[in-house]
Length: 155
Image (tube, helix red, strand yellow):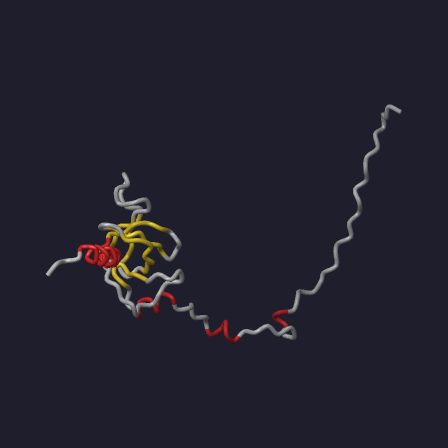
């Protein structure tokens, strides 16, 4: 049996990007997607170093991300992934420290903030005295300040 190297080359070229993506984190097609179309990933380590410019920057990590912090994957590289934080800040995290976020974590982090029951009950009612403007007070009588006239005028 003769191998067709052209077919093998096409197959490996189409599989290589998928393998690189999988190298950064395990993919789950059913996972919820971020606003920009990417998947949410969660920090799995107790504390993951976050590098704004890359892991080889001279001064060490810019901050530590806590466990279960949500990030959006921008691009995967060898050993590190470029991610976007919820604040919009972009940087790099070790690929071993993240994985696709579980749906429960995404739902909890992206749920709209609950309003207090008091805020739900208060409605604007113009007849309510709490919303009436304070009574106008009369202005004090003010006498204008006289303009001094020069006594030695050079006319």
